[in-house]
Length: 149
Image 1 (cartoon, rainbow, N blue to C red):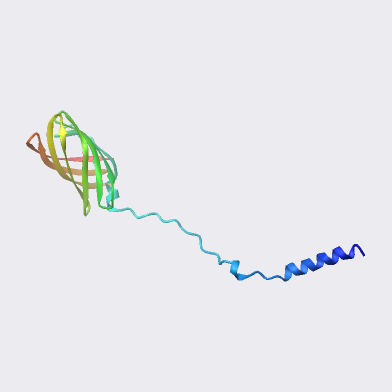
Image 2 (tube, rainbow, N blue to C red; image 1 turned 60 degrees about the horizontal axis):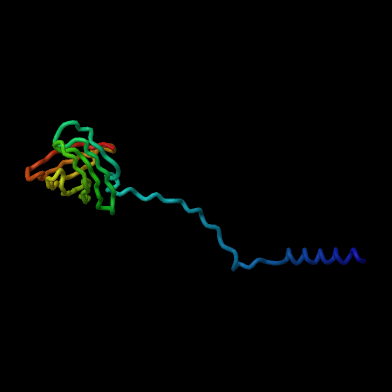
């Protein structure tokens, strides 16, 4: 008799477990896995990064730019160069205008004030064509250069 009671109790528990129905309140439908999306590059991303000049002659040599986008249409440009034998460095403000970036800067190099403005245009994935005009020590200057990544 002692053996029949545990067997009967086990059988009853098995029937009770098999006969229970889950509630639908706790069941959720499976969802499709999320595919990560890569943001589309913006037009200003073509300008972003570090650029340098290989020009050994001209108004300015050893030109280096680092362009950092600050929005989808604006960037800051940290630059350095040697112009007429004088080291020049500073920062410029750039604004996207279609596929080109207009930029302006001013400062003081070697005790001499300068103001420059210009345009930069990606010429290829590794080239950035720049043109500029302005004054250095009160004298008009202008030029062109191609910077490379």
